[in-house]
Amino acid sequence: MSSSSPSGSGGDLSERRGIPAAKFIQDVETYLSQSSLDSNSALAFHQERLQQYKVVEMKLLAQQRDLQAKIPDIEKCLEVCGTLEARKGTGEALLADFEVSEGIYSRACIEDTDSVCLWLGANVMLEYSCEEATALLKNNLENAKASLEVLVADLQFLRDQVTVTQVTIARIYNYDVQQRRVKQVVPTAITAADS
Image 1 (cartoon, rainbow, N blue to C red):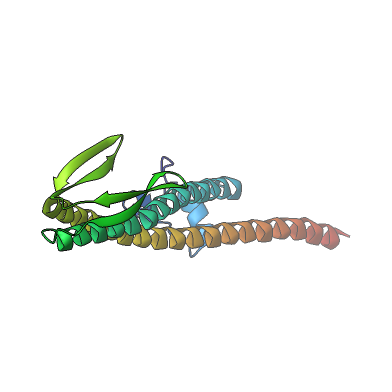
Image 2 (image 1 turned 180 degrees about the horizontal axis):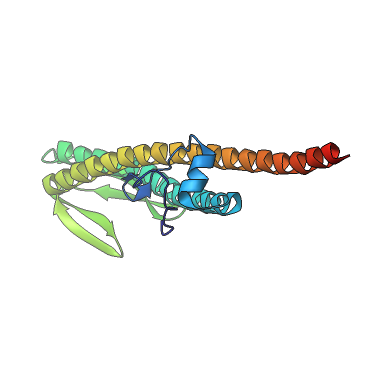
């Protein structure tokens, strides 16, 4: 997030993995005077920060969806490798249906095999022994689950920051409305006293 914090907001903002923490503003009047901002500038800053949080949230949610789709695929591949290893040396062929293209399947007869081909992405497929493939897939599964845990924690942190920012925006707005009412009442009271 590129916006700098207005000065006087109570020190450096802590962050989590590049996501700045929102500071709860207890006293709006003190915050505005220390940061040398008027209500409109403070509202604009916090609304911009809120939009930045929303953009980051969308990116994190997309990453979470990708990982949630990836984990079952890795688990299926591990299961297939386990099945191939279990049938190794039995002389028994394995009949399997595999996806050729989206919605198009073909049946294959897999004879005794010592290797499997793993699709690594970016138009790259490599042949591994069943043991190597199992080790690689287990490592990938552990990494994907760990990444998902970090993403979930990041999303929770981000949601907390969104809530704090929304509360701050409401407090600054309410303070501004209150100050405008006071300014309207004071001239009216002075005019009434002059009569």
